[in-house]
Amino acid sequence: MTTCAASVSRVGNCSGGELGINRIRYLWSRWKMPFLGQDWRSPGWSWIKTEDGWKRFEYFSHKLGDNINELSLEELDNDKENVYVGDVCEVAAKKRKKDFFNNNTKSQFLFQERWIYVQKESTRERHGYCTLGEAFNRLDFSSAIQDVRRFNYVVRLLQLIAKSQLTSLSGAAQKNYFNVLEKIVRKVLDDHQNPRLVKTLLNDLSSTLCILIREVGKSVLIGNINIWVCRLETILNWQQQLNNLQIPKQVSNGMTLSDLPLHMQNNILYKFSDACDIISLGQATPTLQMLSEDRRLWKNLCQFHFAEKQFCRHLILSEKGHVDWKLMFFTLQKYYPQKEQYGDTLQFCKHCSILFWKDSGHPCTANDPDSCLTPVSPQHFIDLFKF
Image (cartoon, rainbow, N blue to C red):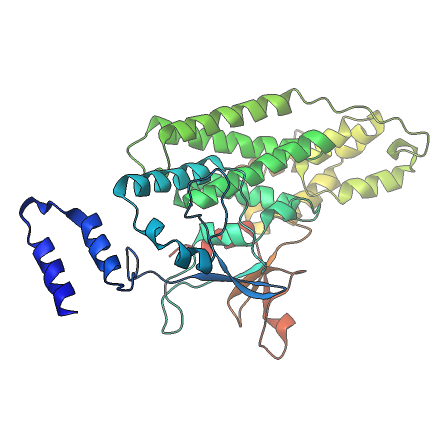
């Protein structure tokens, strides 16, 4: 052991570093000293649970072949010389691994749990904090868009992220964001539902990307500028496809909306909470056009979205002296946010500080878990990760 230390000391004191780091590794291997790796602060191996028990999981392969295979511990013991490769091979291996994951943009981040612990500060038990990008990766929004109750919720969340939080996402979260966005666009092009909602999302996202690209250098962008330009071109292409979308006319031999009695058609209109949907439905038939102009319908819509104090500040009267509720609605929405309605939302457990989809559940320790749940709106979701 003394001879080993003295030899390494002489190597370190050589002028100009003639032997270099590779020679030091070689000398240590000859004396059968344990090789700890490039960084002794490494967190260690990652393990995954399988049917046969726990197995070690490796993100990269130690070989340079085209296929990324797992290297077992026995192969590592039998081929110790491959561990002490030269700097050239080491750099080439790292570059190959980096290129593989950079090109694999369609990769999804799958987790067994569909909930996440929202941590805002470091504690003795938990270090670090939870970020918006980590939550976006963990909560499985790709499957949520297939549920008609959650589709509007996810689209609205992506729209809010596009407006203010896009640059705060990590590189992996950005890839996941655009992968989910692509699935949303493909879904709309296939089933012809909610095109107006997705058009609004793409318009806001394209405006944000134009500002980021034009003012590059003033804000921190993760990734090469060419990647962001390519993303903008893709969004413009999606916008063109949605603008050219032709919804085929459905031929049905059964009863249609126009065949319903007048009071039933009027009740259907009263169930709408979106003014644009009411106007679009009113363009279908002359009867629906008449019903969509009803003053009581627009009064009910104003009372649903806005408070009475807001009415008094922006009171608009018609020529006959009556309140023009339709004009009031479009005036009020310029100054105040509308009430949002979703079929299903994320849930936050105040007892466990866990964010989750309700059907997936979470390991709650409260005596009455249902009393600790709070629905999370898209804006509240973003506010949870503002520190």
